[in-house]
Amino acid sequence: MKLSFKFFPVKDLFYSVVPTAGTYGGYIQGIAPNIFPNMWIAIIIGLVLSIVLALIFYYENIKAYKKSLAEILATGYFMNFTGRLGKLLKTKTPIHFSFPDGSIKTFTSNMIRVEIGMPISLSSLNKYSENVEMNSDIVYVREETYSEPFWVRAKVEDNVLVIYEFPRTLFSISRYMKEDFSDVYKAEKNSKRIYSFFHEKIDQLRIEYSSEISNSKLNFITV
Image 1 (cartoon, rainbow, N blue to C red):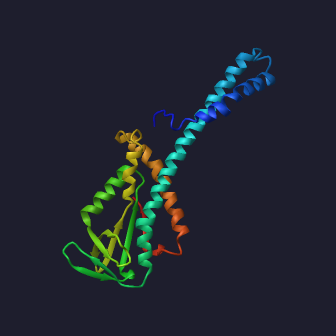
Image 2: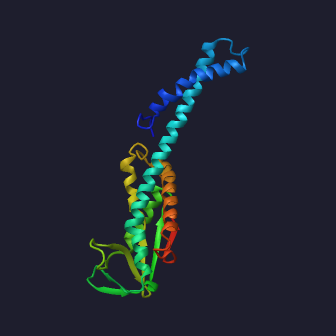
Image 3: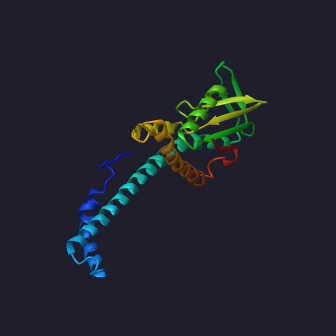
């Protein structure tokens, strides 16, 4: 990410970092008066140390922004997809699914298997999503308790409904961080770090809502 005043600690620079330059200078001259006999030299060195500190704040702010963005997306994804599906599978009531050919098939939760692919980078997200879309169909969940259409990617194997999920919301990160995703190399490098924050938040939410969802039926795999 190129230098941006959005993340540069301007307030810290004026109210904390810059004033401490003189303090650093006085401290440096105090501990080594023979090496730094000139107060201005000591102040300059103190200013350099202050700038280094400001850069540390800058990169910490960038990290905090990326983590915050990943956590917001993870929370939205969990609440609207993973958690929603987990709650549905926790019930013993048969679930009806509408298939592309117009047929409606019913499965109990023990006859449903869910695979959730958690990508480690943008390339793995692309690869997994393409594979899922190629080998499964859009199937609608006929659940009266939901006012909005609820669909999943799935296929039937040996009378078992296999549902394939992955965080599609991760594709939207490039819109928020265009510079970090401006080419293939940057996208691959930066996505790994951001996706790790996403995974950590998902794991946290799985623990937090463990009493409400069927964790045993949600098979999270790294892809």
